[in-house]
Image (cartoon, rainbow, N blue to C red; front, side):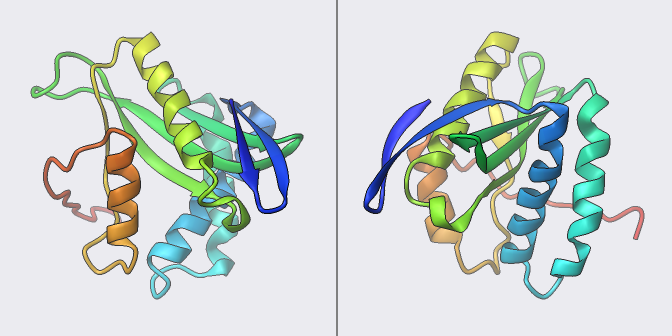
Length: 166
């Protein structure tokens, strides 16, 4: 939870684990992030797919979402999955999506979501949280890198992906 100044008014932002009724918003924020990051690859019309997909994740036991609220209005979301690897000291978290409504960016909402996720990770005994940053051709790499560095993330190497189901 945090108190931030947003323009001319004060907002009280609260972050909590998503409940089933929040997953539509979680999907919308995931879609917004993809559309902004890869505008040539994703369209607004695909939003329905992302929302539907997010709603199917409610019952996945290794997937969690956090939602930030200004009063009763959701303003940001972040998701995490549990993973295992030989390089890890046990299970760890992988941040999958983060999305903030544009009007709420630069007011600390993303940092509040990350802090809530770090507390969650600590409580689960995860030694680390990892994430895949924006692609090399994304225009906002310096801004995103600065944001995540400022929230305790360090660059550990590039990520790669192989599409197995086109």
